[in-house]
Image 1 (cartoon, helix red, strand yellow):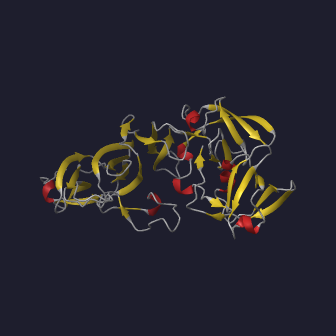
Image 2 (image 1 turned 135 degrees about the vertical axis):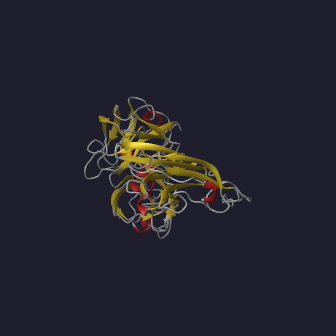
Image 3 (image 1 turned 90 degrees about the vertical axis):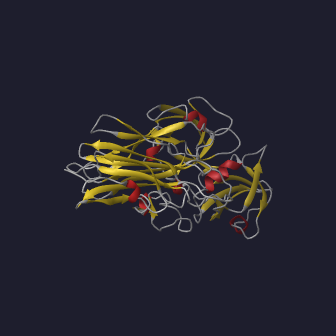
Length: 405
């Protein structure tokens, strides 16, 4: 099959300059496509407090059709379906449902690269990577596009802080992407060492497609409250995770494989890899239990937007010595705690299923439970113990720490 001469400079948008052009075989039985990276050196800066202009890059793909070169893909125009966007699953007041392009030309986007990947013999695709270096953490954008029927289809899309440039690995006709990714910020006490996602073709007949197949970051599968002391308290157990059926809400995980750092357990997990067996020392009520489970990986983990929303009952608390529980130092008038009769000087001993041994336990008990009735067991100043019902309210700006372990 023959094609005419290709002049990229005449095909890129006005104001853009060609950075590179490359011929690629992206669909069987068709002539090579031409992949063009261009940049707009006059793009306005979008970083807060920064004036001036800077290069914003774009990727276009052209095919020779009906005697002329025609554009079949424009990363600045191709919309990303909402379910692929980074704000998918965000609360209604935080998400933007409007279509976003693969490469947003309003951002300071540079470092654009393209590569060919063949996930399967019948599935060659184009890998596009770009990064916004003006972001406080480099914001990486990864897209996988195929042209199997002559038109473009977005197979996979990711946008995340510290998402690195992918590497195409594996034998021809069975390739995948190794994508560097830093540890999620949820986990307290972790070393920001690089980890890697594996993106490739799923094997199932009903769900065959490009997706994250694996992740080198280990996880147990529990949301936990993290205080200033050692260990963590389980706030909730994630369905289908290694922790399901092993851990319970209110468990205090004191150590991982016998190691108990001063704060959190993130550093201990980061020494391990998915598939490792771990031994946990768990304090459950008055029992000291040894629990064993096999670590999974972060490809099974919840998204950022599934982080439990902080909630409050309207009290300030402090550590308590000499008797169990945490001390109530202040009750906000009109708050759920005030309506339930809690008062300064009370000792909170249990909130729902979580025993209150530290201030972090209150965070663990309340996170994600706004609007849910909880039993709170308190010891009054006169020494009597009573149980009251309190309904926490969401506090999206609250400072309760919840981490994913």
